[in-house]
Length: 379
Image (tube, rainbow, N blue to C red):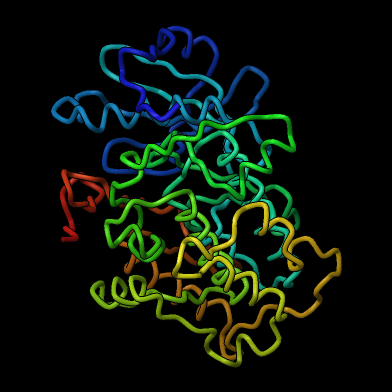
């Protein structure tokens, strides 16, 4: 399962079938350097997200084409209520269309729109994301780009409707971890005992969410996703703060590589449960061998404990919504993600961000802007 799927091993359905089955609207759900995502409807009015890629844009980049087909191959084999649902894959000479379930707000947008939420709400979100990642792990998939923008939340009132999206940097690998072998044997399954570490050496992801071992160019395992999960948990529980992000890219990288973080500011964390803090610590252990496994996390008392935490997640009392949006804007800039903020008298929302994903080029990684131009090179 560890081989990347090439374009010759996966063929899309005819585009004429797409036109018969769906009506593509002009509503843009998201944009990227190599395409955009639009809303589509079927004959019954059900909504879908259609990822549209112009082949002409990818014509001179075989690596990007391989990544695209690899993403389709991975996501079509994942079936979990908290992973975006794959429906169809179409192509002709000019374009590729990937049809997936339509999501709601990403987690950053959710934070901007929600005036208050409890620690119990946070726990439910993180539990769902952990279950989704565990499903990926059980199927030999490492996501490698876990961050709030890649997690969708249905609504402010339904924290069960959580979906993991964007498998553009994901890899299908054989992972052999002794602690997890026992889990598979207990379920009557077997797992290969050879680790293909060559598939997990590529330095990629979003800088302020990648694990230290990824930055150091060491070989790494699925536990890079657990590190990123810990950062997401920190952000959600604190209402928008990030343990590593800095306006200075070099400082952010140093913070991550050295594992420099703390629970701050104090006024935010003083009413957060010790269980929540311990969960985050278990994820953000700089040593991957000591970092928790998914099985350990799912049994952790914070997300396994049925006790309801009623304390609200604190935000600055002066102007809670704007302060958090400001924090998120800072993080978006630090992650090299372009986002457009809009506001009105009654509400405040953040539009679907344009993701600038780190893509491997040789032994380096380049971050692209919305026009596909290299924006930053990490050496």
